[in-house]
Image (cartoon, rainbow, N blue to C red; front, side, top):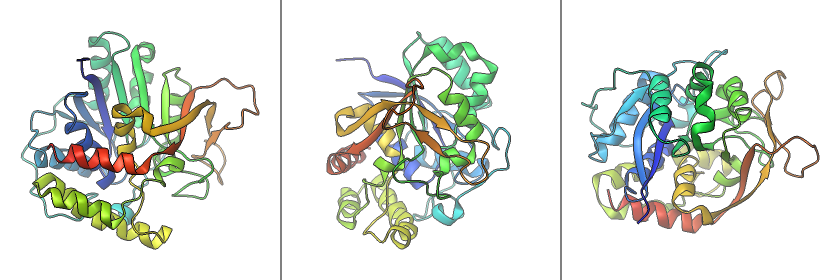
Length: 314
């Protein structure tokens, strides 16, 4: 059997981030989680670090190391999303405060050191939040860029527009300057935009299947999704809201669930109106070179079958 793929999960948990982490931890044969790095985003850094540890403990995986990263974007003030995720970022279930500690090493140094320590082309970065930590790592150690196997990210949108402003998706909007650095880095990028995530909806029947697993992590996830959906149902008028971040992990496990194409993606950082917009050349109308594989289609039922099956393994 092939060696499990080595990944670093860079995250700002968030209920959907929690689902992504659980999907990875439920797939040890395929994915080797080298560490979880946290960044400010959905909620401030102290909470994203708490929430990453809460999820590890829910999954009984105190062996997974959590590293704290950037508490604010490169150049801007932090924008958070408690209006979506609740005041803790993981509102929904009643959870114990974590007893695991965060590691002493800074997330940025952990990312640099890990990419240097492993053979070139073997470490994949999975980014579920703002790209601040990765941008800091590239600024501090630009030589790591060609060593990264791939960066699979949840972020951006094109035909779907934005979800925090009319033009911008939240993760990119929080730190567009960081995103600009990433897209110019030459690292192979796979982008899961709102165009995909808006198709993976947490219908009640899907959440009930997760709840029926009956284990502590699965029940906690169902309760998180019950909470998370309230905002989305009001906003999208659907039975259940989009489950954004686990698409990143699902892609590593089952790439055939997704369809997209290679495009050029540029990040708007100057315009007041469209700051944080991912300008995707889907129709190939410029001669700018491709820098990302942009996904547009997903087998949504296949995605939920995978998520449910892996949550049952925890």
